[in-house]
Image (cartoon, rainbow, N blue to C red):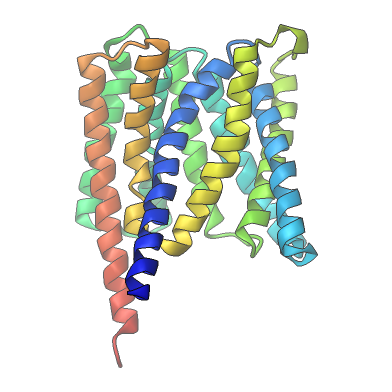
Length: 312
């Protein structure tokens, strides 16, 4: 009886955390679009991630103590590099691109990240399975259609190019994070990544000629920024890290093809962004390709773990 109650409670927690990751991370594209209405894109990202880094860093220090931040220069440098790739070049370019394309189209193109990761593995001479390659080809077919047609809407080719560069940068950062020295505590590592990304955005935004006028920022943009800091960078991230330690990776990884669906729906409902039939069709192709990649890699990992646990 007690065991069943504990299992039911954990199951509810898992689905609650998963719902947060699904909805909140899917909604960040909409929030970014609202924020950049009156805040320059890179400076808005700098405000978001430096604030989140301070809050998360303080929480980690209070809850886990100074030992959470004990690391060598190589680990510190690794976290900073990943932060620059994921946040400065990755998330920052997403905000820049959303000046030119809809939040829904941006989310659909960012959904190609798992496909780029497979390409990076091939470059690193890690041979993926045949079904994984099939998923990559299918997914990139959808990316190509969206890129060439803009989803059938009046989209700017510059924005599409920028969002593809953002996806590649995010993929490189994700790829390197598992292959270079990183801090042992994942929350401390994330605080460092956010700080590095935020500082990088300040420098990049300054070089690109961005100017921040606090008096010109609307209440709507302030609200969007607060949402990104609290929900996008703190709550959803904490839920995601908790899921990694308490739920099957096969379940957690489904966010990769749920987030773009949420983003497209919210963009259409809140901002009346156009959703064309060609955009939906190409987006569905990308989601199918990503789902095939994720499910194939999940089965491969499960098989490898079973072999490791098998008696000699």
